[in-house]
Amino acid sequence: MAGHRIYTVSFASVYPMYVTKAEKKGRAKTDVDEIIRWLTGYSQEELEDQLEKQTDFETFFAEAPGLNPSRALIRGVVCGVRVEDIKEPTMQEIRYLDKLIDELAKGKAVDKILRK
Image (cartoon, rainbow, N blue to C red; front, side, top):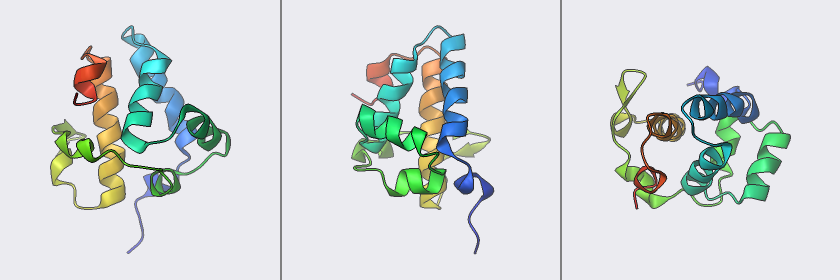
């Protein structure tokens, strides 16, 4: 079975949308980067390298140095689907990130977003 079309989209093409969404609500690019690093285990340098390489979503998550085990605590609805009910692993990782960015844009404290 072929993967979803989003898997082949470069992470770098969507990243500015995450930043814009956060900044429109008074949050900073550094908050977005912190969330992505928490979720994936990338360092800031590794994250910037992935952006520069135009890595697609599937590869971005497949090459993540250490997906945070606490991501299983992420609950809620994104695009009308509960993230905890998504069965396909790559899609679930993408939706986890979407959910975290949504929480940031809604003003939730970063410590709470990172499930601390």
